[in-house]
Image (cartoon, rainbow, N blue to C red; front, side, top):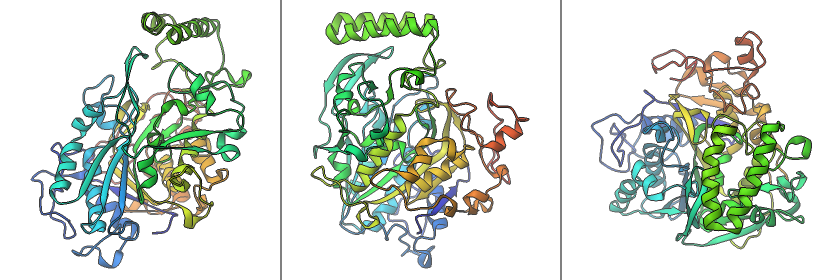
Length: 520
């Protein structure tokens, strides 16, 4: 499979099966196990269609010997599956986790094809570092990951679930009220310093970075004086093959969250990750676009409360919680007001994400980096779960898009360029994708953007990416902080030349449509 080829498997319907461990809904000749579900499994079917479209092991396709991942996964390998497990619940919809998390049915389907390639010898690790205030056990239960793991273990394959975090926090109204240490990665952690080859080395944010916590000393200690350090779960580095399983969603800090953004989940400590730079662009920051009198008052109040929460943990934290409640009324909720780098001017998050991708592809077990050549890259695949995607207030509060697709490839940058285009966005307006074609120090791709091709079981998605007509693309609504800034030019023309696109385009809900104008 050429790195420049990206495959799209289109599902018969944009829905997930309900019952773990999510057996296939048909008896496929290559299936590694005999169980078949009585109910349809559109996600499994779409993964299979993407693999067929990719041309992997084409000569044996449709036979019991078909092994589409055999060129990437060898018997005896350790394969790490990295889904998007950010948060177990949606703030507005009890069913909304389905368009927030990589669904268990997608994980199961990919794991089946990994199992075929392993031929009974090897290990599968499923690992992620969810949002620090998420419940690992709740995520595992919602997605049926425990039942998936048990299924593979019964079949004689070593299948391990790994929470890569070192801490789990309890938050109340966005304020951390308690922390507890957890087991973390059983293989430990490795620190990397990218120094002058970090994307942050050309960014003037030193001393003003904000991480996952209001105690900002930690993140700035790791990104100052020419050093740019990241703490990575050793399991991600030790695995022979890395299989990325992101979600097709919009993102408040990066525009979209697909393959490149999903690597935030291989780190062990979110406070080593710069999320934004404090201040306005006029002050050299990217926290908010500008300061009104209301925002100045809010900034002063937050500064005092953060300081109190750090100096007097119990009393200060209680005050912070109460103040945040009042602040929502006075200054607006974060889900409706731009703050904390949640807008198109965020010039920090994309840099951090590309750094993590460099480490994953070239990092050694001892913290060194391999020479930047194609031969030295970790074996890597990505399957993007777009059966039900997320638009609007992503990554944790999106609205559903029944897009009905699985996007598969071996190059994360090419895959994300296809995903962004498919969503109706302009790659040139998304720094996390645009700049990935020119990463510093360690290249994330050798693919020329103009050479990216798409192959699919849906005929209207076959051909050069640049030549796909607008009518076969979707119209995901961006996060409000990115609205009017990343939509493709043809969307503006459809809106009669408006500079800012407002509201959501109508959705098409039936997979029998000739083209997926707004989803399937």
